[in-house]
Length: 398
Image (cartoon, rainbow, N blue to C red; front, top):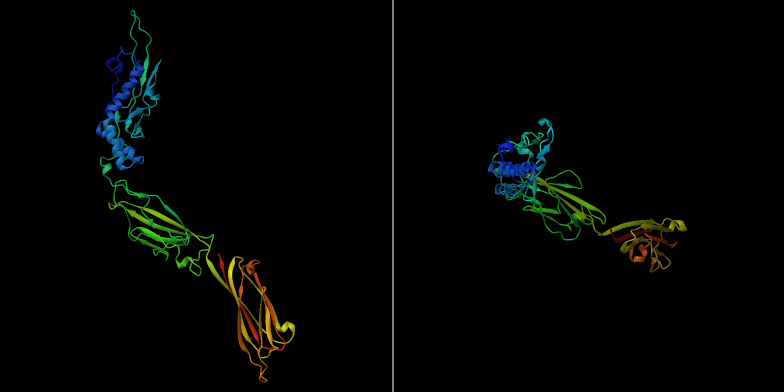
């Protein structure tokens, strides 16, 4: 398709009666000719295809095509194609102009569908029989439309695959989390109905290997993920036991389909921040009296504890010969004292060991230094083999 001729000055559309210069008229002729050519349905289809190739959806690209056919666009970059110069100009050294179109807020480079180069020369009007200097007017112009690379007439009828952005959800342990839609960031340029491909889901915990089985705290129904942030796996004694300051990352990989053969991959990353939980710690100490000397009947020790402990009980138990009033066991748990004293005289020549037990409740002040210290002793008369067990059980936040 030829846009304009090489006889601009002699055969038109140049008019000497117009105030506009030859260069200006030439530029205008380019604009008018190119505008008329672009309004052709076939050429407008090329333009719509270019818009789609540049990232515009099928629907938006078809809207561009309709606007081009209606003439709702503007052109730029054509005035530079009309260059008036003095002296001969080598046509092979002339650079093609780069016209662009602005339509529906989108700028489209038309170089992909236009090509060609030509020059035109004319002379000025003679005066008093004398020929004035010859002006060589050089113009570059496009002669024929060119199909863009990969263009085919049914481009708008081809199903386009859906697209989706990765999803990131940050949750907190023990705070109820809203369900997560796996299609929340997905869209289809053809307006198809999207769904998660059955059997496409896989799960990875903290960068570990993928598995088709979700962790116990994750359930999925109809493309909606629910995370149980209070699941036992995340609690003290659980498989993961999230502590304050720790984060668990769960990645869900899946496929999305549009029902028309198009599909795309996407992922959901769930990050669960741990909160302070109540933990229970236990520790114990045992001692057995072997003689009457102080080193053989006295004991001492300590338990290292979390300073944030808020509740604790020390149980003192054992088996001892405490059958006489002058036989005793006494000591301290931090600042708390305990004492066991025999209630009656021995009734036989054989010493017997009997069980005893008592508890000491600790206060917040006992945990301040991070240590629970204890000491005590059996009286000299208590039979060898008598024993004591000091057991600490306390709760703390972590």
